[in-house]
Image (cartoon, rainbow, N blue to C red):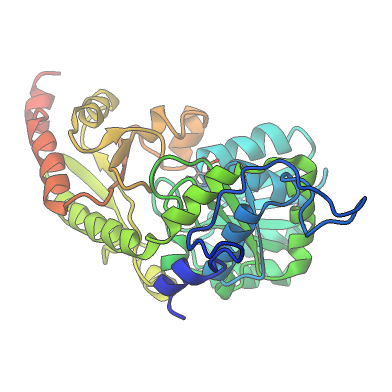
Length: 391
Ligand SMILES: Cc1ncc(COP(=O)(O)O)c(C=O)c1O
């Protein structure tokens, strides 16, 4: 079955009692038992729910895994993995470029509890080899990364990590299973901020963990119930609805992103464009190999000051200034003041995360409108020579 067919058919048969083609929202906390301890597979919704089960089945299928647990947010999913596989004294190796919330979770929650967090440039495999000498329990990466869209070679990283006995976790939020399947490249666990492209309509906060093998999944599945960070049946239903159009949406997101990257490259107020589809992107060749498309996100550095960047992101018509990404409506974000504000300024500078770096999440509007909006507002900024003359 091809991907687009699986988004609609996988794990989603018509409901047996009524023939309803759309999964009902089983909006119940508890289930009537046949006798004490004897039930039909469900006893309490924190533990299991039929709507959630359908969603877990389709996400398992799309990522090519064996098991899935969904959570009330992407960070709740990350927390479950870390609680399951990282004990006090254990080491986790992460790249320099990770989502700000992951950075905060690692440094402000798990480090104080005794975990050791090592940050390495994953594009330097020799440096990674040296880092795994410390026998980490987890090697964790995003690819493409948030917000600079760096691309790491998942297969090569997994090889190095596995030789050292670590499990490999890949945050596949930006690529989605439509463009990349990390489990087939050697990852043990995939995390998704379902909030983004999978749900796709800016109306659900949700996360998922999908596993290649049941063994590595088991402690995470246990914590789904034991920690209790589960999503509501209604949110699961919304994601089931959203995921059915994932292929169509991702095609349009990627088409829009490519058109925007090309237009930005031509503009004198743009210092640098980050998009894995550009042939001069350092991860372009790896992206061509491990992804079936370059994704829907584009970032760029504006020529100017943080004030210029703030003014620009606030001036756009079709790109709403907002924290999320991956929705049908276009969004823009200034990471240094928004998603990555929790990372200290000096660390952001070390990571190459400039104060004029702007992240775009093109929606599925028409590319002409999106490109037109960006170029008109860039044109409206004072030109760089004019700006220099006034200082
Ligand atoms: C790459 C990535 N991973 C994880 C998360 C966390 O997901 P959530 O916001 O659903 O908790 C985000 C949120 O922006 C993200 O961008």
